[in-house]
Length: 311
Image (cartoon, rainbow, N blue to C red; front, side):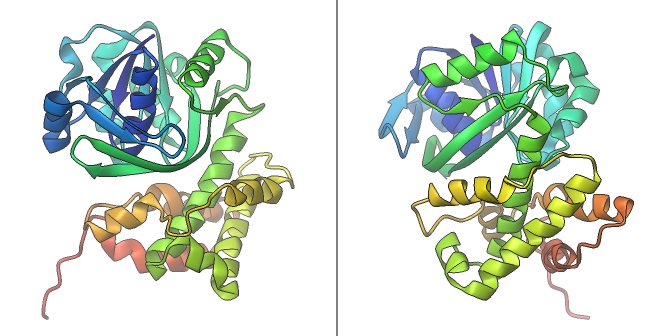
């Protein structure tokens, strides 16, 4: 397949790197020193399952000169969704599929409003991966990626993408309902991001302190009530699924991606994680006091490190 990766950060760099390593025709759309390093030195990917590899890659900051592709892996931060969706329009042909692998649950609709709903499928992934240095991706944990048609139907195009992922050595599944899969991930990462950023602590410490672990669970519980009120049929096995995911994590130092943005003084995906739960909770009359408390504590950092002024 001809694949373009929109956003070559931790997620896009890992999945795009693995697909390129397997022989797929991959072009990365990136910027800055990361782009410069990929062009001059190739892309290095350090993985938890196949070790480290470096491959020469095609990379650009401007997709206007590229021909339409079969697949766009859409991996930018959620607050960059609309600008990035406009940027990929030259890549969209009649059969092009856009697969968002982002945090949050609203990106497919936002992308569809720009490139057309017929081109967009749903997706989410459980992975810990970040840019270690320009041109170097460090992936420390991966569970699986989920993808599927937004209407829940089976399709050849989702099966083809899942098969390409499998051939590349990365786990991918087509669940019965991609909306349930996206919301399940959303609830888990929203709680972990909130507690991890407010406490500045890694997963191992959070889970070892009963009161802090309970806070994490109760934030998820608030989100679960909102999701069900919103019409997402998340079953009672949600908690067992999250236990399985948790047991697959062996690194006690793992942190949410939003923590690294917070520490670097970068904007946060706050409104697309916690903000969505609060807003939909208000719409459906579901109280979310713990989620709001975490949101309020982090709101001053939403647009990057706040500037402190003396009054």
